[in-house]
Length: 302
Ligand SMILES: Nc1ncnc2c1ncn2[C@@H]1O[C@H](COP(=O)(O)OP(=O)(O)OP(=O)(O)O)[C@@H](O)[C@H]1O
Ligand SMILES: [Mg+2]
Image 1 (tube, rainbow, N blue to C red):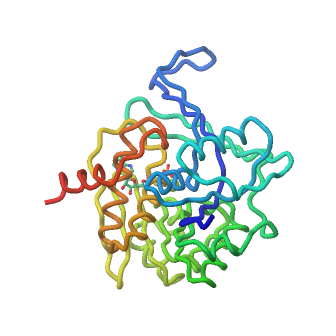
Image 2: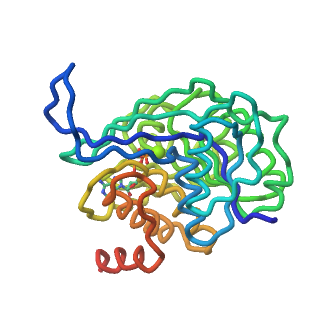
């Protein structure tokens, strides 16, 4: 089956816990919520895209163990096609413990890559990307994702990148190859060694002809277009948990790109979508439809 969008990146199971502000170390605490959910930039973005009705495939590995079964089922539940995932003995998805601050929704992530295998070049099928309308990759599974980006370039399949952290030299290669590079400010600062958002954008602009966007949580997002900086403020939200806001921003941006929206409208759509994600506990607990996203834009834009 031809897929509209191919997504590749770290496969993760999240354990999210709403942590009260006062804890006593070494004791037990009953808390209001602990949630087990699929997570991570690529997986969450894949769910957002699939939920919009686009045929979305996630590529990577699977195995017969608990974490792998959960990770696959969590993708499946959102309508993500997992038929391209390859059986690999002893493979295990990464696991993350996400502490969500009960007061302001800020999240702190602890993750482990024990037994995780990133997608290897030998397992990549050129047709995945050749036959799709868009490729979305993260900056974690760098070797395989770099190869996928090269294939996307060759076949002129547009790509969206989510670069958070990693080996700077490889991330720079990915940025060079990518068409739409969206990264959180910390990622941009890591790669450029600069602090200021505008400085980061101009420095990254020297690496790529692709569209650059930096996100910075409640401060919104910035893009560079024809040497001008565009700022999209974050939409106001009753924040419960910001887990997955960045991932949803990428997924929603990809949806808007495939709809032919211009840069300003893509950023607006992605920000509005992400603001709705912030109002729910967990990055995959609720997926707004297009009308709900448009309503947020209409309500807050005059
Ligand atoms: N508190 C918030 N209120 C409204 N919108 C938000 C909030 N936090 C994030 N967003 C929206 O989501 C976008 C991406 O968020 P952010 O920069 O935190 O991504 P991130 O650090 O990659 O997060 P993650 O990878 O955990 O999803 C922001 O540019 C903004 O549009
Ligand atoms: Mg992110």
